[in-house]
Image (tube, rainbow, N blue to C red):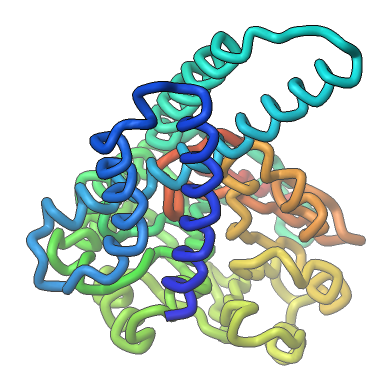
Length: 362
């Protein structure tokens, strides 16, 4: 319910400001037809979240697409209104006249084109490669890891999307796969309706597939979700560790939303010195503690780098590493900006990605 109230408040503010802006600048926005269509789209943003699970899948998907695109459109419409307002203020201060209608038209066209590009980008992830050399592995040892975070399987992203992800991962011929949380988007029922997990059973990683929980993975019956993941041959590590190939120690934490302390990673740290120790943590918040506890590689996701430009200005302030790679003492930290998306099916910040991590023994 908190999510619904939050979305409702955001939707109301964005929609109200945007409606006032478009009504002021375009004559068609003053018609009843425009108002009713506008009202329907605004109401659908919250309505799509409370549709019964028994609602036909095609209606759920259509409603979700409209909701997501509407949020993104309203967000950029408000930014347009602010920018246009600043131009008008500048005109008054410096005594020059601006072609308001032309500015509004150009701004509207730019918003539409930007959203179209962002939607295309959301479904065309990139591949980032990171190379790590370590003396903790024997000379000549090589491991190829695929790191994936924030898949967000649900109403919009279903079986076809999952199958495409598996094909991209298998094409890399990884030794093991790490899933850094938020495999689920909202409700398990949506995943069941499309059988969206079944493609993940086809992941070809000789040393296994390992996952930690993200905040979204707790939204609907987390114990059942874990059973479903493990039935898909995914080993879920919730404040737990496992030894792989006699050389790698992989640990996974419960998400920060459920466990803000560093006690779990410290409890899992014994014998870190005996292996190349990898820690999967959905939210990139515990890098310093992980470094102090002797982990060698810390992988995370969650941030989406804000997903919509210019929101990375916020995520950069929130996290020590909202995206990319950074050394914390002797530990390497890698944060992925995610493979999927939450809410708007739009990515106008850093492109979605798979991260390939090649670890070489010295």
